[in-house]
Image 1 (cartoon, rainbow, N blue to C red):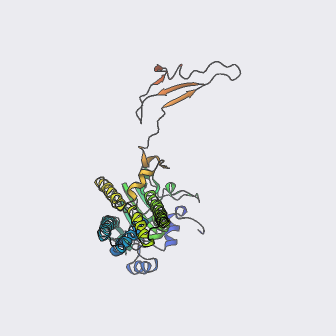
Image 2: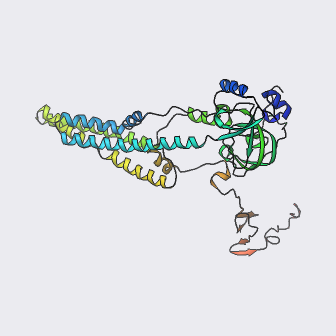
Image 3: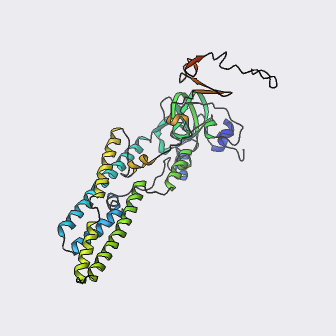
Length: 390
């Protein structure tokens, strides 16, 4: 058994490795001990940000920092009305972003609670319904149509049993399961017909399985771990606003220097020309731009909410608009899982094929005229060197 994967083990080997009994399951004391050793059957996540940190993050944008600088300069120049106006714009921008992210965080937490079902198990010879978080390796789990698989399982009994594995593999068609062991060592997840994985849904039949791994050790847990390790990247809009802010600072400083030098060269007092240059630089900064962008994104978020989509950060709304190509490796993910022939090329002839989907109705057309699919459309010219085409 050394070096074998779970799908390669037969029932006897499986029960021996996991030290469990198919009829009686684990006793309560052993289940408690294993729970202490392996931890709860839950997907770990990074600790959420506090409301205060969410609010402070709204003021870290480079463009907002430019406005803060403009506010300070306006206050030093005695332009209190301009300073108060810019402060109001910054606060409105921050509050709008904060409320959106706060609502999204609460919605995500609510969804996570829905994804933690209970499980039907056999312990100490009796059937019990326990929280999925308390499952441990070696538990005997019972599954039926409509259940969500609570952990990674090796199936030992199947009765017309099939599972929708789209959340894990992307396959749109339910997979029929079988309890027989499989000899192949390297086998993709979608081909392990005697295993069931956390987060997938039972579509038909009943089955009995043995828990092999739980929590972050499951296949879904590995995906969750990879997602949490990724670094957050700025959206295209954020990059462009940051570039705009840098350009505005460079232009503002250049204008200030030019105005000051020009005034001094014409005999104007240095102090007055400095004030004039700074005032011009502050005037060149579009104070209303962040607020306009935030309001536009907030309207986009509201439209997404009506379509039951949760947007965690406002700038994410704009990201999809920048996409020029969407790549998908699963036909069932973005399409109807149908592949239809629409055109044939035969020896320089282009023949259009009508019809779509699985309907066995179609016609072959060439230059707008229907041709016989069994006759002249596929007839090849005589070639004594090559012989007839069958």
